Length: 142
Image 1: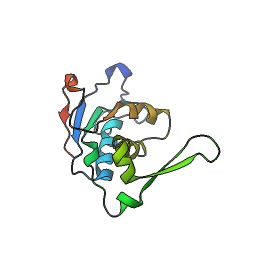
Image 2 (image 1 turned 180 degrees about the vertical axis):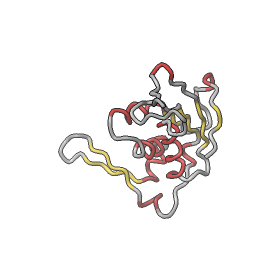
Image 3 (image 1 turned 60 degrees about the horizontal axis):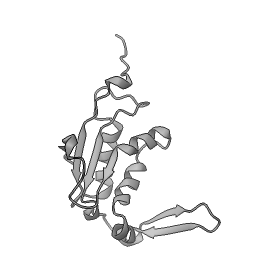
């Protein structure tokens, strides 16, 4: 029996839409990472970007458990000496709620150029509206 390796031209991408309202952040992010990576497909290859595209709406209505709303911090560095900045989850929710889901999913993907190409298939929006209705996304149950 031969092992069949899928070619780049044979990859079919579906579009999925996820409503983040009332969902727990970590559980939602792990399901989205699985679909983005393509692990739900029968012809999964770990070295290829063969996953589907995911649109997340209502990103500001995501829930976190415990005291994470006040205690969880996000760190970034400007690149200059003394340029480290920390932001709490509550502050990030007020200013850029789409980054909460994007950072959670990015941490669950490979940390190399494959992961950087896979994360480009994730589209996160603050409200209920999104510009991807032409792709006819299907509802993803989480």
